[in-house]
Length: 75
Image (tube, rainbow, N blue to C red; front, side, top):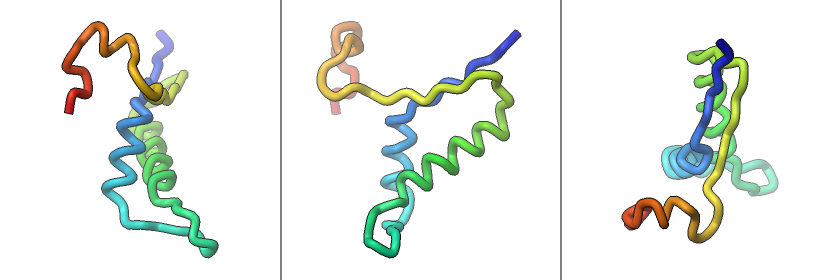
């Protein structure tokens, strides 16, 4: 049976942004978070051999999750 690897991209991006040092290109453009996310995605791909992969991100503002669960991201 085919498998799907579903990744919470917002969580990965937040984690990479705050966990890695402030890496930048020679022009000063920040690259640390992207490098971290790609590294984590590569690790997932090697650990879990899925036929299909998707990385999803939260939408800005209120979503259906807020209606279903009032404490969603309440902090």
